[in-house]
Length: 305
Image 1 (cartoon, rainbow, N blue to C red):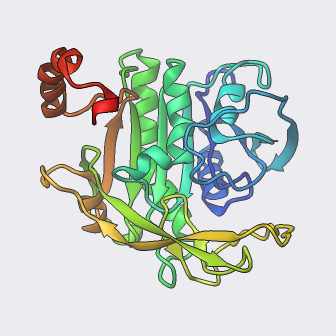
Image 2 (cartoon, rainbow, N blue to C red):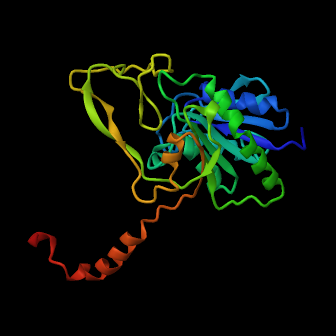
């Protein structure tokens, strides 16, 4: 056990989510890794990289065969931060894997994703990390597909650990992997870049928080009744109004169509996208403001607009 690499698993769907359980089961079944789990105790989809700051968070031991696991009353970023801190576990993992998420995380939805944030937090701390998402499609996807997705990612995970052991794995980025809906017949790996695809939203007034389908962490709707649903209820008073998001439709990638993530996931590939954490604007925007900013002092005052 001492010579085995250590993998820590987290997610945003919660510690009982089928994607996480399938990933852990596949990792454990190889008998090649020491597996730790530090994941939210409840659904945390689309919380992005939020962290808990104002109060302590609770950790509860959970039985997962072959792994040392804790459920955390916090966000995915909290879970990763705690799990790699040596405060909860006695060692720092060699690799952090966040997932497997129910729903893809491509394009602008990477910003919303708690799954990606779980990996990004490890990246912030110079620990190699991978986020994994499966393009769940209601009425077509099955829970068993998460196991297929985990198995499909094993060559990448194993190869990454080889490079990590040799200290040749790059720490200037982390990987975001998306698997297609028909994962059993995937077309192989495809190195891609983050695109700008996004699902446009609107708001609908509702009378119950149970109206509509489950909102996946990609902001897409899953109307499949067999998918896990949230059962939280709200205490409404006469002065409160409920609103819920609805999907208007998808805005597909514009510009460089040859390398973006969303396109190739839809075509059946397993996309592998190196990510960082900087939010630099496109070159054209920087050039515009480079000319614009010096002239700001010469503009009319706000009162004259």
